Each structure stands twice: as structure tokens, then as C-alpha cells.
Length: 491
Image (cartoon, rainbow, N blue to C red; front, side):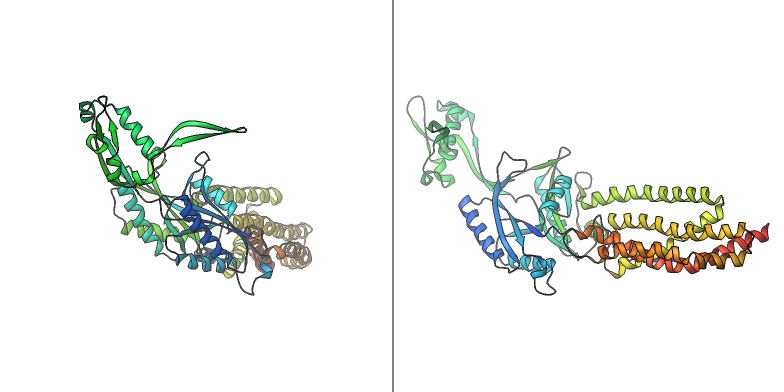
């Protein structure tokens, strides 16, 4: 048991093993405020760069998203679907993670491109769970957007320095230059104007106003009236636009309004009725639990903020992991308790039931050792494997102990019954273990698409049985002899 506890501290912990969907989903944030033409030009550059990798079969890009959709994006946001050739056609030793690292390094040389790598299905799942397109998300809550952004940027800078972090960025677009026009109602009234006159001039000059419609077949198109760009391409020119009073006098817009250039948020995200910014983080080459522990500690030490007005919360896979581990903390003890009750019902002996349960750490040690050696993490998949391993290990013990008990009831001496029972039940125990190992060994060694979830489960069962069965064949009869010998002396 001590060895199991020590070994468990060296095994990383995750929610689920990384899933390989056979493709790449890339989201790129470009400088805010881009025109559609400029965004299309940068998207073409991105597509040409990604298509240059020999492992890539196609690259499809989408600039922005419709405002009427579930999640709207501006033209500064590009989504890329990247298809890959079958892995067996890649150069020997070349992995998908190597390709992603090369792509990330290549995009880092392009100014204005902020990339985040994922996979199509995982991206949609994480977006629904955490509202973020990444493995992890740090959400900073606060009402003052400038202070909230400062906290988020400092947290992102800290996280970038932590081993295993990748694609770290603040998801929301940075502040955009804005033109603020504030009307002076007193001056407007003094010149014989009203607010509607000012609003209509600004609408027609800057935004455009629908003045008619054109019918072409079954489609209807608005005819938009808008000032030529040469009359509205600077605050000064907008201020010189003329209003016409009731008396026919021409009054510059700047005479009745205050025109200022400032920066403001392009989007404001809310959750639980509070404003927030999200820092996205992807993990590469590190388990979730150890990363979170280090990141939490460094953020607490480095980022200073008013904890009464602002709050930092982790989201993403961490939330799923916490829920899953909480359930496992209930399920595993219940499974063990149910096994104990079944064993007691079979043998009518608390000592023998406890003896069989005490053999489980041997199998757990084998499974943990295999995870450590193969560089895997403890996750939901491997946890299910351990639960299945408990059942098979207990079954092997029951096969042996029940036969020894039968021999003793026939009058065979304790030592002779133990030796005879262990030798006679060697073949059934080995057959049970060999069948399970042979059936799951291919799954534990597979590397194709879809094997990521089954590999930890199969690894735990195969190597746990391999180790636990061999040890149990020697240890269980000896412990049974010691237990029953001590019991006979007490009697």
C-alpha cells in the first residue's frame, strides 16, 4: 500500500487522455478593426502557409461569423479546418504534436497572428462547457474592464512561463479606437435644431441609411445612402458636416457636439451577471493537475488585485476533472464495500473477505507502474480500468480460496490444503488472467484514431493482472496459511 501511494504521486492526473480526431482545428485572432478585404487577404496568407506542410491535405478558412449565429465573431477572427494525410504515410517518427509545434512556430513569425490549436469536436465541447476554445480557461471577473484586462494580461504572462502551456492569450479582442459624439442639447436648441436632426446627419454620413428598396426576382435589396468616404475619414471632417436649421442657416456639427477619439471595448462578455475576460490555455506535454497547482501558486504570488472586487476562476477540463474525481471518490469505496459484502456472503468469514480485499493493492501497483513507465496519466479511462481490475483480481482470489476451503472441509490438514489448493487452481487462475490479457493487449498497444480512450483502460488491466496474478499466486496462499494458523491457535 505504501508503494502504491508513493507511486501514485509520480503519475500525472487528467480528466481524459488527449483524443486524436485525425485533423486540426485552428482559431486565429488577428488585429482588431480589420476590414473584410484585409481580413480575407490575411486569411489567404494563412491558408498558403499551412498548406505548405507535406502532411496537410487541405485547409479551409472562415473569416468571422454571422451576427445572427449562436456565437458571432468579427472579421478579425479566422477559423481553419486542416485535414491530414493518414499517419502511416508520414515520415518515420513524425507525430501530430510535432506538426502542431512546427505550425505554431511558423505562425509566430507572421505579425498580427495569434493562433490557438485544437480539434473540431473537442473545440465544440469545450466551448459548450467553459465558453472557451481551449483545454483550460482562466476567467477574470470584474466590472472595471481596464482593470480586469490588466489582471488577465498579467495572469497570461505568468502562465506563458510555465512548462506545458501553449497558445496562451486573452480571448476577447483588445480595445478598439472609437469616435464618441456627445450632443450639447442647449446649443442644439439655441440654433433651432433638435436631436433628431443631429442623429439623422450622423446616421446618413457615417453609418448609412436605407432610403429605398430594389426588387430583383424574389430578393429584396436596400438602397443605402451614405456620404463619400472623403467627407468622413477623420474626426475633423465629421465635425465639419453641416446641419441646416429651421431658418436655413448652416451650422457645423462640431458647433453643437463634442467629438472625441478614444478607445473602448469591442465586446463585453458576461457570466453570472458579471463582466469577465477569459485567458485561454492549451496543454502540451504535461498533465492537468500538476499544471494547475503550479499555475495557481504563481498567479497568487505574482498577480496583485482587489480580491473583494475581482475574482479569478479556472474553467474547462479542470471543472470536468473535479466532477469526475468527486464521483469516483464515492463510487470506488462503494464498489469495494459491495465486493467485501459479496465475499463475506460467499465465505461467511470476515478474515478471508478482508484477505482477498487486501490483495487489490498488488494489482493497483502493477497498473500504476505501467502508467508511469508508459508515460500515461491517471484519468477517467484508467480509473474505469482499475475498477474492472478489482473484479478480475478478486475473482482469481476467490477461485483459489474457495478450493482450499473445500479441501479443509474434507478433513485435509491446513498446510496440505493450502499447497494442494494453490497448485490445483494454478491453471484456472492463469487461464482467467491470460484470456483477459490476450484480449486487451492489442488495445493497450494500439495507436490508431480512437485508441486514445481505450489505451489507458487496457494498459491498467493488462499490466495490473500481469503483476497482480503472479504475486497473488505466491502471496495469497502464504497469507491464508498464516491467517488460518493464527485463527486455529486462538481457538
